Image (cartoon, rainbow, N blue to C red; front, side):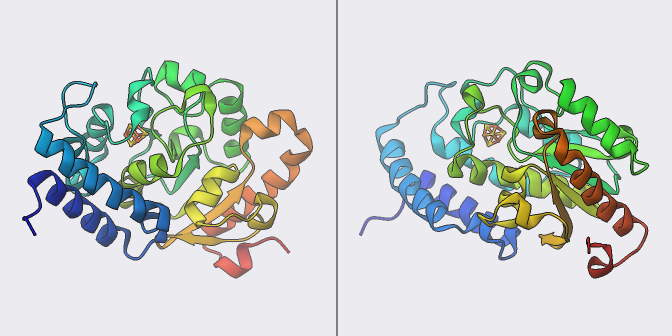
Length: 264
Ligand code: SF4
């Protein structure tokens, strides 16, 4: 058997480092992801041997994936944001107008995580703007947290075209950025806004209605799941349960344990 080429070795190294950095987190280890890595290893090997380049700037897919180790080693949020700005780890970089890295206090006690940038976020490069963003601000204020005191970001840093659901390989490619953001900020509580963010962080297919009202864990961080502000604009009846979920986060910040903080 001939030795693997450099591109394939780079991909294998990235996969192993992501696996190690995930500390057993199955988000990185889904069967689909494994199959994708194997498929990409084979494709990268073929591309490297053929000297293939991508349409986006002449980088091979192995070059793009090789940025993986830099993510886990980013010393601060600014460096990580620069990596996102030049990221081509998935095809969403081809259609986005702006990356939406996230914003807020680098030492925030709370990190709010949504699904992915929408049209306004893509235009502005900022997360949770527009009517949904204003509603988020008011919800946070209801538990004594000005927007400037928290950190706000999404699972994906680039907008899926026409706001379609993110694909598993896009989530897999982008997850190291969120993991590094959390590692740098070390929040006391994560609030997952919306079913997609909650299911992604908690690695479940359960309905949001079954996930809210209690405290979960993601990479060791407490997670409270609740409705997305955009959904609240369509369903005002969900504002009350959302407020109750945010009270769980408030109680966690006030030093109450997981079991005592949950509803009921
Ligand atoms: S969604 Fe994430 S992985 Fe994909 S291009 Fe944007 S920053 Fe990179």
